Length: 321
Image 1 (cartoon, rainbow, N blue to C red):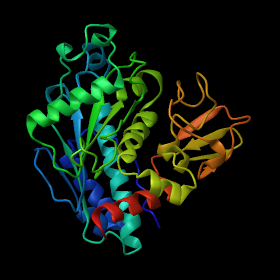
Image 2 (cartoon, one colour; image 1 turned 45 degrees about the vertical axis):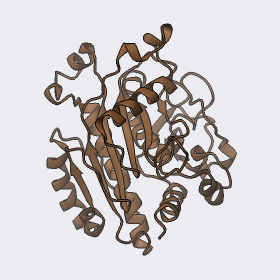
Image 3 (cartoon, helix red, strand yellow; image 1 turned 90 degrees about the vertical axis):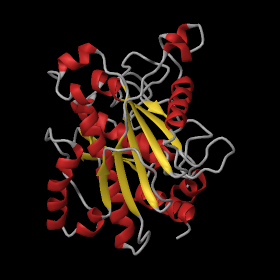
């Protein structure tokens, strides 16, 4: 059984709130999974046998800080960033719980860390409209440069940038790009680390905190999925098709992380305010109940069984277990 965790709403720091979650998981019989999951605020390398995600806050404008009552301003860590990191951590716990319950990935642990803030220098963009509205490719390239400058590329980590750009249509809700899209990729320029961006400014401004959590998970999980494995598990090479959209009552469709931004009609207001620009086929989803007569959209941080299996197989292949 995959552990089902409630979403944290406390304002504690990541390290503080992980204690209460350990106690909660222990009551569900999940202590083994949680004992392998650690949070740390420092930037350090970890071994290849760890599921390692490091999260970096990007700049947050004054208007957003006012909106959240300046909560977390000293640490560059507003409530949406805090909740998104917690959602990513819980997703990794679920992945390892799924694997460990099947005697797989034994000895593999998970680490979620908060990295130092990442600033985007205007000089890094070409002298064009990109100086104001940079392309996803530009953001990821500058992010990669900052990681190299800090010497934090480990060869086996996902580096996740929390971006605040609600009006940057070029970045959209976020994303990854080759050759740095999948952890462990041996492409010439990748060095094994993956970089990804989650535009939490967009999800917070246009959608909801539930979408914020799901898109943070969504962009992280993208870096843990090999397309050949995805095709093997789901019958399609498209990661989004591993997601689910389940009708939970006559008018409500509940969407899992990998289907978020892709479960509704391709238009404005179809679930999320904006539809994703990547691949998808509702007929190939792990489950899609359709959206006819649906007028309410709910979001669950639970990963579908297909997603859990595909991530587990990818990690087994990368780690050699």
